[in-house]
Image (cartoon, helix red, strand yellow):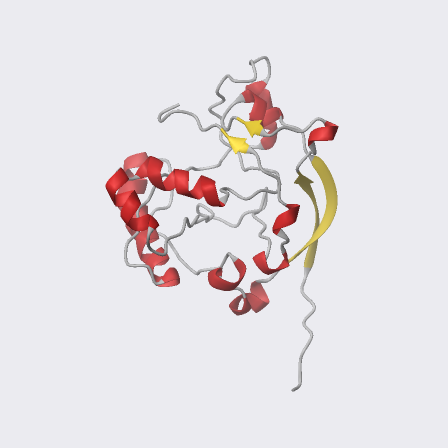
Length: 214
């Protein structure tokens, strides 16, 4: 069988990895706090492949992520009620189409507009556990939930009876990311192909989530 090797465009960048415990790392963190904004990581120089020319080879079932073309009717993402009214139904349709699922429950959304520098400035002078309302892109390599953490999200956001019922079926947590109204040129999103990952390389960090409305 003939095969073709494709050379993808690459972009140099720095990825920030987990700081091991022996080097001063942590096993618990508090998202949304000054501590999380100041948390230390280990920088590694990397080159990121631009997969858009071979995007059809990457699907959520095989790789854990998938690129989907979508133009939202919501343009500003500044009005919370408008986002829920306009964008949420679009998200439900996208997730159903991509996954084949028959029910989608949206937990929340977040608009990350601020810069990393702005978040550090907002955290300056605050105690570690004080909340910082400036929302910037996460600038470190991570998986949002462990297997157990995903179950906790399920039970935190659904009635117990419904969560019990769904836990016996095939279910998943799916994140959707998209730019607002123009091409992203700062803090672009990068993905890791699940097939290249050894789970023994993962480190457990307990995320103590802020209370609703914090």
